[in-house]
Length: 411
Image (cartoon, rainbow, N blue to C red; front, side):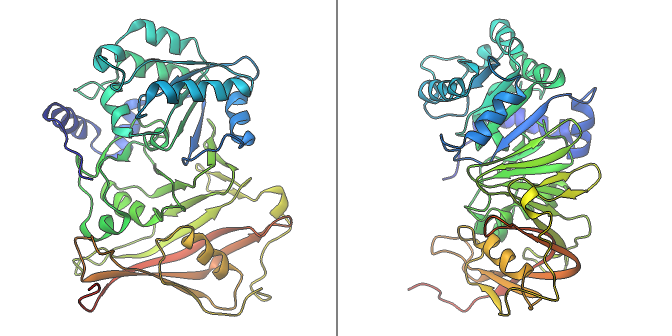
């Protein structure tokens, strides 16, 4: 659905886009000193029984009795969402409370709420802040002033982060973590075929993670690796981290990423990638894509990777592959299709895999599809788990090219 952006928000968004200029500049301008806290970024759909993630959040906030401020600003039903999540955190030992800041509360003046010194004081009394899921635009429209500066409440959240607290968010709360976020996104295929624009599909986030990495969520479940690529190219990001559902990453002050929860996170590296200007449709050559599984660690500062304990002795031997078969996906944007393809390729005698994406019947472009080619390179590495059918996969090459489709596709 196309979101209609009110004129007032168009003005602040335009001003802020001028203000941030680019990811790196936003990072430098927004952080006078390196925050000493941690980020816990959840890919959405976090289940109540995922104790590992809930317990880590409470631990990062100080352990039993930790005060955690729940901000239901993004939620469609903020009263229910805030109450439920505060209760859940308290079940894991926290002393969580709801900050009643949302345009969805009856009669709320969200701009006045965001400047409330009392709400800011409540947040500063905590050692953790949790942003619920919903619509990320509600978060930025509430917490960022029209001139792009931080409201009193947002400054209080940053104070918690600077002094060593934890900032957590799920789904929409994850989207706001980077300096750029998806605002009014089309389908994944539509993003590839039509492109992205500042102030429409893309908008400024809150920038907690810094200016050097783009964050996205619901990643493997919804095939969103393909929509990450146009956004990264548009805004000049070299690194992207996509977190799957019921999964979280923790990023500490040393910039080390740790994966928690049900599945994992995808790391996209465009530092060596290029595009062919002569092709009018989206294309990409020599990107690198990795899959970080549960328990893995990756250091953003050094690029060092550490496998989880159950994979340390499970490095895949290319001379003795488990599979000897072609790898192909007819719907690479489908649920978990990317991970299935990568796992089959890393432990295979074949060194190439192909995935195809074609438009659905309601897409604007019906004449073009996309071919995704994955290659195992000399520096590609896989680690197999000793306790489950799971892999960690590093440095597969990814190339994307448009392909013309015979018409009509649908009758």
